[in-house]
Length: 449
View (cartoon, rainbow, N blue to C red):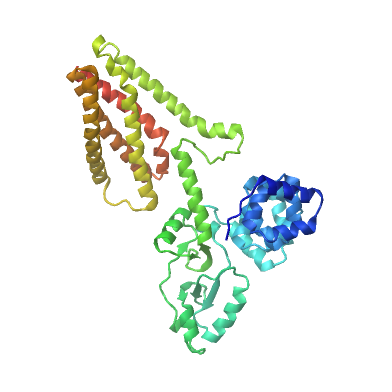
């Protein structure tokens, strides 16, 4: 399958067909394209043309298109649709996607849209999902699944499964519940097909099944599904009743969003923004960390000013190596914190904090000594003064060790306090290490010279 690539020529062709109201040509053309690719096209159109396409195509396709659109584009399109038209789109969606879209609608039309839904059971499930926090398993799950009662025999089970499967896009697992809807286990399709039709499900189901609570955080669910290679995982309520399931496509979205958030935080952006957001929103996201960097720079200036009279004129070369020392401190700190943040995210950090700090100190010392040897030879060759070369080289080792310890300790400390450790990388670590690095550098240099 050749990946779809949206070109300017193709987009202009779509716009021309819309302008000339060539509905049949548009339908023939777009019905052959995957809904995710159509969504890419709609994202590039003006709101009027985008709305025209959504109204033109069948709801079974446009409903999927809506889930793939950028939020601001989807919001603009939905604002141009009637509540009945919105309800027609939601009737075609799984409950989790429908609930996500309804949650974005203005509160004054939510009840009206829900009342327009034709499938009342579908509407009830959507309303049920809306009561959960969006940042929880309950807010992430879908109600569509296949479940069977442990007291049914195989024949009854197959009949019920056929009826349930009509509303389920993909059947990943068959879950077994008791009379109180409590999750008991899962059913193997092989066992179902090779067992007598009179056999009761309680005799053949597998009692071991991984599940998550409705209040579980999406990040933790992602770790569980990744660790056990699960395509779907059932969700249970506070008393163990089966209430929904989460599929791998939802978890991929969680992982992507978390990675984007961590990347922005590491780059010094304090809130979730995109390149197309307003200048004001982008400024609000970036400015706090830039102010921190400015404060750090002023602190470094004051530290350097305090050592202005500490060195003789012939030793003034010490000041010229300040950017190198600051850069090395920042680089080592970011490297250390990035490894720790990644380990925390993947839940593969083992051992105590003290052991981790000792390991990082030894690692930093080894790297520092190797780099210091090169720097010592360069300064000695360039300046011809062994005391200056020794002062700068020893300072570099000390600065790298301290930077490694800070880069390791800070994210671990934040994690223990329930704060996202990704905030430790980037400007935070760089600024703190710049200040400590320069202070250590000049203090050691003064001691030697």
